[in-house]
Amino acid sequence: MNVATLVGRVLAELGVETVFGVVGSGNFHVTNALVANGARYVAARHEGGAATMADAYARMSGKVGVVSVHQGPGLTNAMTGLAEAAKSRTPLIVLAGEATQARSNFHIDQDAMARAVGAVALRVGSAATAVEDAVGAFRAARAGATVLLNLPLDVQNEVAGEGEVWSEAWRLVVESARLASSVPVEGPAPGADAVRLARLLEGARRPVFVAGRGARHAGDELRALADRAGALLATSAVAKGLFRGSPWDLDVSGGFSSPLAAELIAGADVLVGWGCALNMWTTRHGRLIGRHTRLVQVDLDPAAIGAHRPVELGVVGDTAWVARAVEAALEGPPAQGYRTPELAGRIAAQVRWRDVPYEEETGEGRIDPRTLTIALDDLLPPARVVATDSGNFMGYPAMFLDVPDERGFCFTQAFQSVGLGLASAIGAAVALPDRLPVAALGDGGALMGIAELETVVRLGLPMVIVVYDDEAYGAEVHHFGPSGHPMDTVTFPPADLARIARGYGCAAVTVTQRADLDAVASWLAGPRDRPLLVHAKVGGGRGSWWLEEAFRGH
Image (cartoon, rainbow, N blue to C red; front, side, top):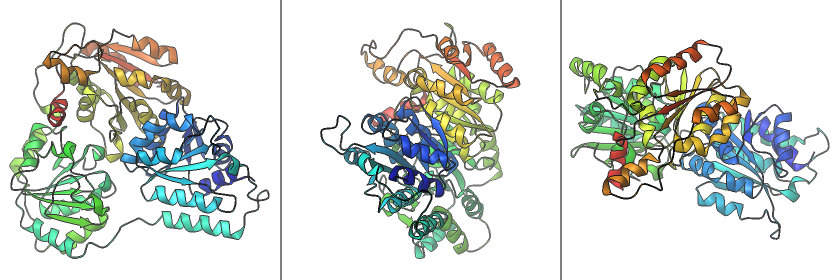
């Protein structure tokens, strides 16, 4: 076999089950080798979509994602998705052909491109090192890196073995990497810092935990510790759903917070961020941290401690491991802390955005996005995975659509690129085939990523695609419009998105009032044999509440 075939076989042996991509001459053989060895190949219509699909798949499945692209333009097309994955520390491998001859029209500095967005750049050096190089890329991804594995065209064609014969050394390398990848990374034992955190919690009257991406695996441990400490529970947006079902769940901390959630988080006397950056989004530019709040951060990465906000105590270690250690160090019976019967009643009645009264904004053939999303939340089955695009609209699906757990919400927003929502929903749907996938898009993001509608139809995904159409880049309209700036560059004429969707093979309905959603109910009751696009003409008279919060930092 040649090197390209060997690399594909090694990755399949290591457990790669799914690969997304757009195949060209430079990645043809490695992709086929993955498929020949049991991996599923999902063809996208654009490399940017393929990279985002692989990112979302990795987030929702907990497995290493793989995307395969052509050299040069195949990689440049994938760069926005690669940047999002790297900023989110998604375990992802990008397999890219590489033209090493400087005169080739495909030649670019692929290493520099990867490093520029925070990814790790690796390369298959020769037939002699191909197995070790592939294993190294997998292990780096498994540890939480987004990795570009360059496959030089000349090296791909080198003979790496005869037929099916692998040397014993190759087998040992692959087996050792497989065993290592199954062992959770916990980092250094927190020791005395765990005891210090235990003492802080014992003295707290209003403790709050905020769990982030680095705590999505630690829900049980954090619930148990919170029960002992009397803490309320919240998450960053990427961990939404982690504490679903708890009567003390405040949902998302930050710009998406409901008024009651913001009040209770800001009132904490001890606030602990678990695997959470405590950045401007999660803390509302620091306004959710009270003047006298004692701030603690727990993270596996020492460099993350205090990176966005000074903390009184930083604990380095895996969040689940630290939570267990802190619980073991607690003395005395469980504390009441923030948890009173009166507060439990307030949380039950007021913490969800749908329970916050609002004056409906309708008319001129448009539906209020809150009314739309609450109605969809009531219609859609609970077993769902929601993926959102970026824009003024995004707070509505993020906060008015409930999700069953932390795997129910796919939030690819680390880079804040518009246009990733539909591809994110595809990757999430492939990872979680037993759930109804819901893509929530603005009109701008829908049109940017619309080529992947064909992918949704081809894969037979029973997806609900909701387009919040205000015929504008709403964030810019509401940011610059009040100052009197002309809006011609960010507003657009109407587009019949339902008709476009039907052209791709989707079912579609245009929604301008609540009654139009009867068509959604009918689709849900039917065979769901093709995706449904809901073209919702939403009111755009004002910016969303979260956007007002976000722009305070601009």
